[in-house]
Length: 283
Image 1 (tube, rainbow, N blue to C red):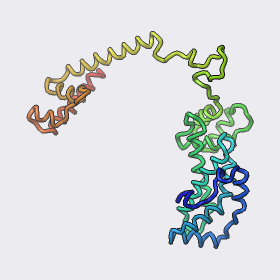
Image 2: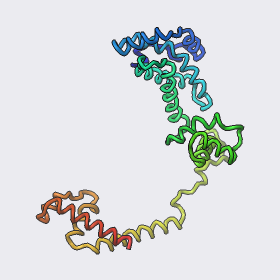
Image 3: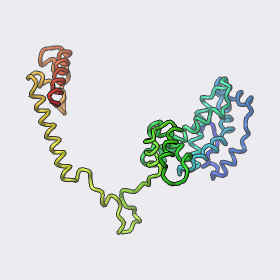
Image 4: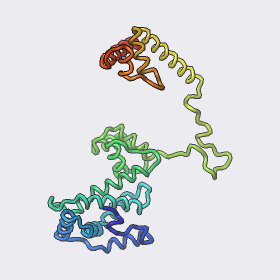
């Protein structure tokens, strides 16, 4: 089921968002009996005209829900169109036999689609990835009192209400209200303006960082040599051929042919050798 197939209006086709909202508000609401009949026709006969009428009668619901997400700085028209996608998904999955009106069923799908759109487009850096972070993302703005930072009591109360950790509340507040800064200056900046690119050092530019890296690589190399030296000649060759040959590592069957043993036996020798090397590395 697609927007093109159903032929319902989108803001761009009516010239302005105001015209679109006026248009969708003129579509008549359906009675429970009409809604049930249309939904039955859709499920039984795949009747797209029935689907179109179900969608059209609920477009005003999408407008109302999308209006509640205007605080995230995204165009109202885009939020509406994403919500319309959720509405079509709801219509497609709606079962009139469950005894629930479509409006109640569709709210979840509309909000879910709008949420995904906001998370993908609100900022360059994704601000909500876990379930707890998503819950905070869509509730912290409405629950926060005032424009200042949350107090310790507010953080604890919010964490308890949403059933999340206080650390998650603090982190999400920082992500939501922290200001983005361009790494490089814009084309309209004067010559005296300096962006972070002008004064931020590369993390590996410090001399101490170079020394630490070199020392770590040296210790790793010495440890590997010591671990390999603890193996017998056959075990060492198997490990080197399997793990240290970057371009063309040997397979178990390759080594089985060389030593005249089964591939399973090569695997056992390899496993025993790796375990012995592990002990040598931590010694």
